[in-house]
Image 1 (cartoon, rainbow, N blue to C red):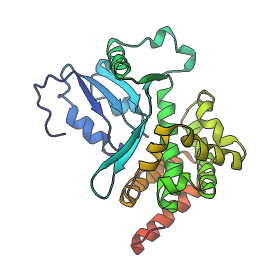
Image 2: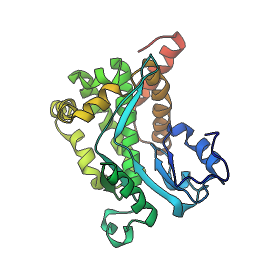
Image 3: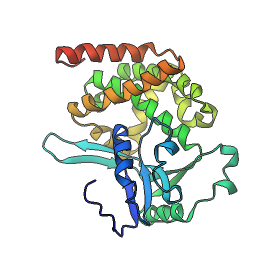
Image 4: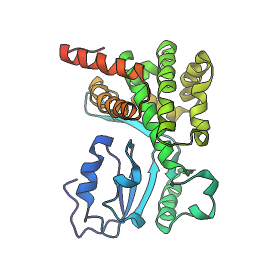
Length: 268
């Protein structure tokens, strides 16, 4: 972030960092964007539009990559890419036609991905989608931490069942934040299926799509990554649940266990 001169001539700036570093990046980019389009490829738990208030709104494009990975202990970056990216807009699905026509900058970003071989998936209630995606992390990362890795989680029916229960506990938090959960049934619905069925679907789905399996196998490859990432995500979601009065005993228990184990210097 320290090599972006004020007089740069970049056409596109891509922002994709841990959610807890997003405010730092926004502060750095304030006054440095120039005429560039800023593509926001970021996980967020705060109000996304408020989070970017320091940047020129007309130059922003929202999206999300279908990718994952991490650095192996030997320093090699391992990961996988799916063949589409999400482009997001803000507003109810009922207004998803003319009021959400892509801007010139969004069209340019979409064409950039298309010309590189990627498909485009549009999401109109992008705030709700981002928050649900964050909740999925808050539900599954603790279980991956318990299993020992994300790949081990996805290979274990027992751990996946616990992960599904974690998701079910957190979904009411979306409604408490004002999200119309019905707009996201395609994503939320699988977690409402009978527990063994939902866990089995999660287990099988990545195996049917080779790049998705690569994403799972390389996601958060090191234990250090899990230890570093799970705490801020769990704490942020727990704080919001407590603020809104939503009961999340499973998440509370995990955070309490994480605190006790961290104090003892070990793993769950």
